[in-house]
Amino acid sequence: MHAVVVMILQRLALGVLTLFVVSLVIFGATELLPGDLASSLLGQSATPETVAALRRQMGLDQPAPVRYWAWLTGVLQGDFGVSLATRRPISDMLAARLGNTVFLALYAAAIAVPLSLILGVLAALWRNSLFDRIANAGALSAISFPEFFVAYILIFLLAQSGFFPSMVRLNPTMSLGDKLYVTFLPALTLTLVVTAHMMRMTRAAIINLMASPYIEMARLKGLSPLRIVLRHALPNALAPIINVIALNLAYLITGVVVVEVVFVYPGLGQLMVDSVSKRDIAVVQAIALIFASAYVLLNLTADVLSTLTNPRLMRRK
Amino acid sequence: MGVLIFLAAFIAVSIPLSWLFRAGLARSLPRHMASVARDMPLTAAFGLWVIALYVFVAIFAPLLAPFPERAVVGTQFQPWDSTHLLGTDRLGRDMLSRLLYGARNTVGIAFATTALAFVVGSLLGIWAALRGGWLDQGLSRFVDALMAIPSLIFSLLLLTIFGTTVLTLILVIAAVDATRVYRIARSVAQGVVVMDYIEAARLRGEGNWYLIRREILPNALAPLVAEFGLRFCFVFLTISSLSFLGLGIQPPTADWGSMVRDNATLITFGDVTPLLPAGAIALLTVAVNFVVDWQLYRASGLKEQG
Figure (cartoon, each protein chain N blue to C red):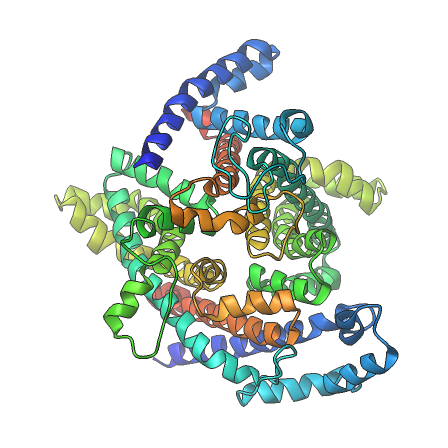
């Protein structure tokens, strides 16, 4: 038990270090600009006085380490500063949207993870059958499609004939059932995009193991193929599967950006795209930090979980 | 339902076409290449002729297109008819012409970006593997830090800072992608630099640039070429997504991603036209993936046993 705690603490320390570096990169990226942000935002026609005023307003008259420290301590207390475009506190703008985005990502994950595990196990079980081939070809093409293509095909097939709404309007009084119904199309789009990859990896991980001697032994004992795959192969294939699931959940984070725009879903991704076109750097930095942190934390969790499923990885050192 | 029929028809037409294309290649190429062509799977043949078609359209777009790229030639959202084969867009520009010009703009920009990312990423990666020591450690840790941020999010951040023009788009995506190329190139080159012939060349007194160019690159090329195909798909999808979001290639340049965005309202009225540019993106990505799959299979040496 002791070794497990040490391992988790080590990974956590590494995760905190990564997060710190990520925050440095996100903050430091603005320093790459020739000149500074204020003059770049106002353009060439701006008078020196307005540039100086904006610079003071954004705190650009202070040295970078001081600004970074102020920003970081603010973020750790939940204060992201104010938006450059609307002058509103960023935390207020984020609060409701963060919940919406998490809801959409969890909804998609709740469909995609079981679905891809089942499809992957079946494809491995019936290897080289017609089902396997169709599933594989389907997966390869689904990976190649841009998200908005999948989204619009679904709108064309399901929304245009009136089964589901093509635009998501959320209000706080909605019941969970209504909410699930209204957000079904965006969730389905995300599901289709990530299922392919997870299914292929599940299949590959199981097939990889099927050639090993202990599986042969199980087969010679006369066990049914389903039992061999589920009880003998799957537990040992868990580590790569957990990794790919975490990777895809992390991918969901970036996938939501496009899907939210297609379905006019009031989430973080849409706000980020709006802010990029307005060049509202403060908001973009805040959202980038949230997305990047989620990404780092998911990878960290996957790392810990896959180590836990394989005791050999823990005893090695 | 119509979509399914169209899809079935498309597959039914493309199978004999791919077969003919493969047979034609096997017939016309010199002998040692003809056997490669004869052994290639139908999916790869399909991928190759689709890519050839895109290149052809990209080069000859001005000759093929019935109308100029940016001219308003009709009223807005005209349906399909004999003058405007695919109708007109939101501003009354001919859809077919813009679709053809899009091959040039979208694919061209994606290709330039991938090439740039590859030159920078693979040279740095090989250089790091060759020199080792603090340079390798420094570069690799720096790349690790950049890769901890999802690439689309990082691109969006950089685009906010530098503004959205085509040049910044190319540079930003290339920079973000170069980190991924660096990883691959470094790990491939690390397997090569420990070889005896590298040692021998070093003892001859050859410089780093000679080693990279004449000894390492030729031996690391096969995996890098397959990676180029995959990276191209990725860059192509990223640029299309950004253009779709209104942050990539800017109007009035004809571009598939922004064409979908501009005409998306038609979809809710049951018109498939806006799906065509999206389909054009998907088709090229599928084609490149098929060819890359075949190349990976060939490089892995599996064909020898089969």
